[in-house]
Image 1 (cartoon, helix red, strand yellow):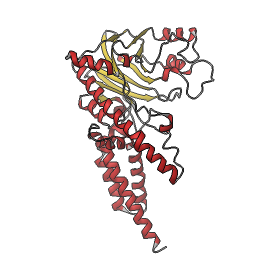
Image 2: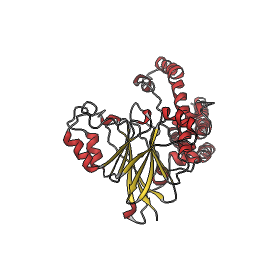
Image 3: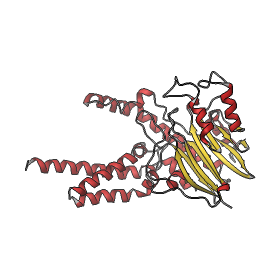
Image 4: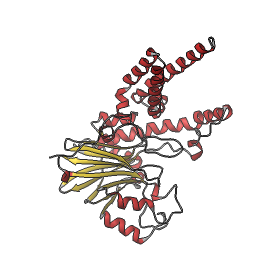
Length: 375
């Protein structure tokens, strides 16, 4: 034991140092343009788990009396805090100045209002959830035709009428084929707008590839522009998403590595780049709007390149301003990522509270933010 113990301790030190280095690399991965490198963007996806692992390892070294290793773990988290404060925030809900000036906005990739976990249950749990949610504005992604019984899980006229009664104002994207699944349900009047680039040629190009839509909601006379987006996904098959969970030993690990390198990794890079282009186009097209909420299925995590583009353009993220600790909004295949975002900008908007709902009809959880319109 006198010989083995130092060797084991040395191995743990080496593994810890590797963990710390990878955590720092992930913290700054979002600063690397995916046009040139894909690996840093992939590392950002794992940042919450790397940070938690670093914290646990640091505590373990501290309890074992290894102060220097514990200090290195703390220094790692300190170095990465600029990103970690958005990924694992330390904040709390706020009270409004005037309750009458608040409204609740929800984003939900509803997966065609299907039910991935209780498909045989009577009725439609997703629609019932929308009716009972109490949200004032709901931005939906992957919503099909509510009037088509063939498109909606357990469709019924009474259920749709109840939804319409709760949300008498509705609008769908009007400008892009790729945005046809973007809709808004609202208790306030809502209008779909047609975003236009200042350059007609650019506008014609982006109209084909645009993954977002622009709306305007009239909240008691206050006209609020809202972008509802459904950014490019990774387009992974179910088999590819299960690569991690299929690892059972050396042989399966080798197979999973090969699948990741040759099949999954190229798709990830393509998606990172496509989202970045769409985000830049959205920012440019809406630059004349001083107040704006941009929300939906972002398909990218806090700290990523696309996320940083939004923050650099003056957008605030409601989650780190009002929440404590990390969260996930994607809920399947052990890919527990926070990819549904609610951004906003403008001096008259203030985020008060963020809530992630637990309904599991879709592969995404709904996210809701309570906003206050300041005088």
